[in-house]
Length: 291
Length: 291
Image (cartoon, rainbow over all chains, first blue to last red; front, side):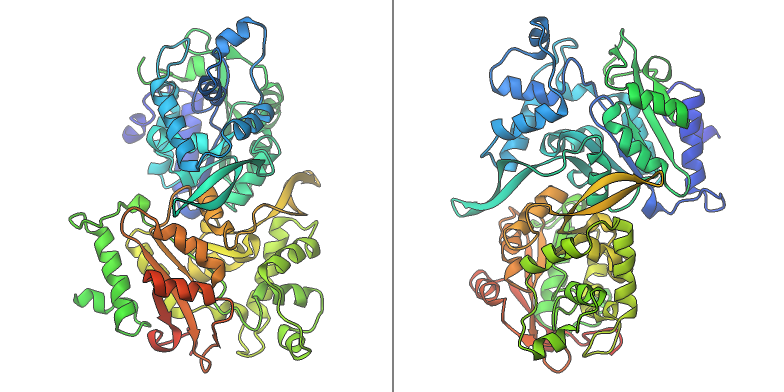
């Protein structure tokens, strides 16, 4: 137990932290009825709002606005315009970045995320990741989990920073995808983004589809924060053995943001089905690494 | 060197085996100029004709014919009909197996492959894997490679047996995919196959697209046997560092089959670019495990 007390240092001691530690201990203990072989210890995490901030808009929208020389999302909101939904954002990304190679796109996104600053926190976007969640990803990997991201956001956008920020390599990132085509440019083979979505959008009912397509196994753990994660959590909840479903609840207006909007169904179902709800205010000792 | 002599026991000593051993030794040696970090040691293998037999037709066609109570591919050939190409096979598979859940499909495919027998060899299809290639997959993984399959064949079909036959888990299988949809059946969340292809077909120019979509990194090693693998090999050959491209050449009519048909372009390009051509007749001490 001494060892366990030192894990997840940015998590407040309490029910949520205990639930995580007990779940991991159970699935890795061959003598426990809930033991799960390492090869089946699959955990999937949403990205926006779960691993990093998603306000005042998805950072992928900020990226597009920046590259189009448009006012940022706060300025847009002051004029009464709402932020883009996933359904609006992904086709716009496909259109605006058409014709780029995947490598060019990722380099541009990485450059934006590491140099441009968030309007409220005045930090590069890559520093808006949640420290307790990164500790959780590390903790799971230390216990032989395979950690995946399953995001409604663009797969290339997330891959541009996920290996550095979360130690999640590109092959463990699932997201909404743009069709690419293989061609030779100056004799070199490249993959070029074309303006067409790969069906389905990796959101809502599309999340289990993406998990099956990329992983081919049901996760035993899923963590999200919004209604876009609902079906992913339902899909995980039906696992035959032990499983853990969690929602990050944004209830901390001082350190981050406070909102239930867009998460109403997920929070209701969490209550009904007994999924764990993580309070950012109470369960996170720190929200960001630089605090 | 004593240790190295015992590896790849079903491979004849000679140029090809030496090429493999030297490549692996180089990329894992931090002092070698061709050193590659373990996280980037990605190897991709075609399946049909590369890891197992693809004659008298793709085994996925045999599966469909069997489940439709049609004569087998040899009987079909006697009547002068040609076997299905990937472009014909995948849409047919999508049509015939529409409405099944992915789990049901995989169970049916696994049952077929482990119980029905190949018309010439009179062995279950799963026993038609090439022993030297399985040794190669093992050898690469022992040296911290991540081994992927990238097949023109159906992803669910290959996932039904790849973990048992090749120790390749489902998340390391890339193939042509059928769209699925999430639904609740008797209250349980399932993924149902619908009759629509996910673009592109994972063959020819589609293979690099699939590699980028699923892995997000360029491989440093690619092994195929036909023109369907050409672009995958070209894509790998452009890697900035050290890389290895290989083709399995079917030149052994006694133990397996002899044909260049469908591999003409790949064999020509192998000659031009110096890719390694594996002679099944000369480089394989054994072809199948049961010999």
